[in-house]
Image (cartoon, rainbow over all chains, first blue to last red; front, side, top):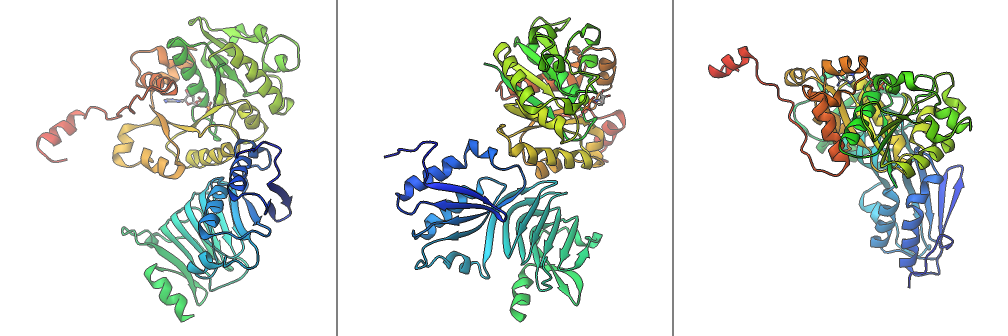
Length: 221
Length: 264
Ligand SMILES: Nc1ncnc2c1ncn2[C@@H]1O[C@H](COP(=O)(O)OP(=O)(O)O)[C@@H](O)[C@H]1O
Ligand SMILES: [Mg+2]
């Protein structure tokens, strides 16, 4: 069944100004598509990109995906830590928005480590699974949720949204920015208890609170 | 076919050259055929640390530019039969060679040796790209200082986009008494940021400086703790699961008294 080789064309990768577009064949078997995707993102993929973070849009053409399949594709792409999956477009009839709706306001998921000197940018809300190291930067136009240690620079609401928040399971940033407000963590931020925390703007002043209060705050807006 | 291991760090002065020299020597001591390659063009010093400076006739750039054959540029170590050095050029510049050229030479060395140990220059520019171009594995050296860890992190990010195995970490110049007082980043602190496996912890050791001034790799000195640490790294490279050594110093006299009276 597997008739895969270097020159199969089930997955076409195109570079655009906004990152990479993966155009997926919509006639072949799903499993063949997946194995070619895995292969294309394997060892030889290094040739295409350096270590800067590149966003990826996946176009499935006339194919629909189950949530499981959607997740599988996201995981394969997420394995390359410098790829940021922006969207998976499927046939218009599919109920593809469900996962994102589950997470509320369209949250994109990205996993990996943002290391010193690397910049991760995203338009919209981002759920980041991993660490942002000192010297690393994450910039999003929406909210930023970090399941991991935030030790670098984080900028939420970068296009000017003052309602944006930054949440992290370990909040030790070098600097936080929300919209145009810049804040360095004062010493009193470093608390012994390791509650997940979030930063927000209150009358243009940056404040930190326990995560449990985030939902209260978001609802009151 | 041998394998090529690049020793890199980002920051200068953290112990790349010391690690290259001692790892190379330790692997040769264990019976392997090793060629150390100095890619720090313009600032070579692996030859000095190995005490081989006065034997240099040709260098890496001479080989690349076809002024001599590879075999003519290889310097045999004075102590070990199976240890060789390919020195860097001193009068040239890092931009005078290209990554593909270094890669080609490393490929040829891998045909002749079990290991090529590549000493990388500081920085992340052309010299770094030259050094990593032919490597199969990488060792990242850091010291327990924030700035060194930051640069190591940068280099690990750079290595991720290459066809190189997940790099291994060497933490150099650990001072056990400072660890105890909490005045130094701990191994755990460093690992929680860098998130790669530790392949060795080298204590800060005056013998290292003495040895390098005498052109003798420390690893042949049985009195040195750093020597043991380097030998262990060589064994781990070969796949031997040697546990990381404990850096606990024997408690000093005062501490022993304190312990006796349970004051500590
Ligand atoms: N474990 C150690 N204990 C004491 N001195 C060390 C140790 N490792 C390195 N040094 C010293 O630090 C200096 C820089 O080391 P070197 O290996 O030349 O660094 P690099 O090649 O990264 O620039 C040298 O003088 C060396 O002798
Ligand atoms: Mg050096």
